[in-house]
Image (cartoon, rainbow, N blue to C red; front, side):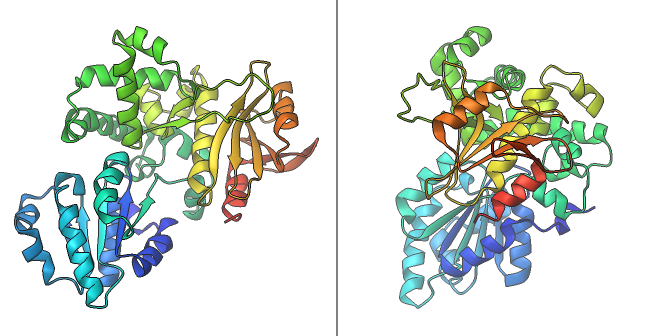
Length: 395
């Protein structure tokens, strides 16, 4: 199956934003499909596409205002904007000029591979003129829409298109290892971070072994042989590049002693498995990380499909109450999610205690089976795909 013809759930959202907002910034890690999506937009709208990693296209923007001023009647796509961050100031003047001429939307589609850096670069100059969207790797619902019946392939290989759609597990693993090497040796230095590639690789592998665990910066620093400030900067970098997620603890006045350190996991399960040299399902099932990997996979997929405004947390007290994922809706409702890698899932006492503390509106146990059924105490045992679809329909 060709990755270029697979529709993404973000497609209609992106098109709608372009009809409403002057600038749309599409962020996401490298190789996730941003350029493919942008080229489809170009095909539909006869837009101008500029790849700012191309010397030829960068040369066209030597005098950006002169080049772009006579193109205010067309959508301009700027790929890999981090290569020319000075463009943001120029775009502001051009957007204001287009507004005076009566055009108020669909001027620029900007693509980038980092989050915080781009938000800082663009937010200062384009406030009130820009909307942000994140394109993630394929999720459980997109894979279902592709006709795939086996979610284990997505879990093993992750959601990057070239990895997921590879002809074999071995080819997929090779792609992911090359992806990791490219990030370490080329992409991260482009963002101005002079970090020894081998040191960062070792740190990334440590995080893979620690998948879905509590973040202990002191322990990581000791194991890596660096100070805690350095470890914090590495985590910030991988988070900014949308490769690692810190899941915050839920803070609440429940008169309990709460665990407050965030959980941390590599967002794409396939990248985590590649860092651990896990190449097939047999190797995954026999690896000590299997349960933590499944938990991170479930949490990341639910957060990817959650409606805008839904926030994710975990909940844990020193007394043993624990909820793997707490989804908070904008209206204040909670959904509590327990994750079990078992065909006969039974939540532990800690989950029930956490639900007693927080009184969530709905309670779920996600498991790798195919059927949904009630378990008692208002609990619903449910496959990941079904819960993801239920969550999406809450929008």
